[in-house]
Image 1 (cartoon, one colour):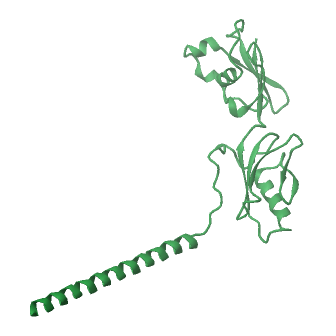
Image 2: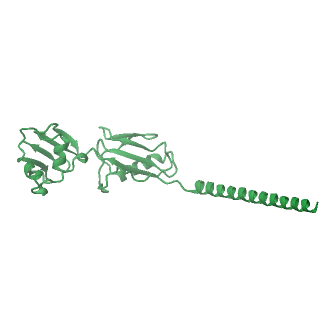
Length: 220
């Protein structure tokens, strides 16, 4: 009889211990959930960072042009943030503000313009304008190529890139006599010769110059 009583006491003690451990585990879980929720809700929201597609070589004096693609971010206002391509009239359309002149402005100037217009609706608007694609800077390629025409400079930074973008040389192209016409600040034109045959054989790599806006590649 005494043995049965002792055994019952041992079982009761184990049950109480197990119950205490279970209650402690539940309390710890609730604390952890509370900390996790606190860390999530207290973390300040961050503005959109620069786009991975944003050209890295744009300076502060870059002027937005027609067909450029812009990413406009209004801090904490996702309904006002969007991507927009500059139309042929040089403008973009934005919520609340309507038509906004973009061409001829730098990104910083456009940020200030948009922020000024938003002051009628927001207390202290913070605006970021990023140029995601530069389509306004173009070059021309003429003559014996498959697809002559005007192309965005971003597609073809060099003479060889320009030829490839235009579909390559035609059969009767004078490969040794290709040249680039470039407008000088003084108003005249300079001519930069490019010998395609020489270049593809590894000769004179410096002749594969980096193109500039409004350059014309001529393939006789």
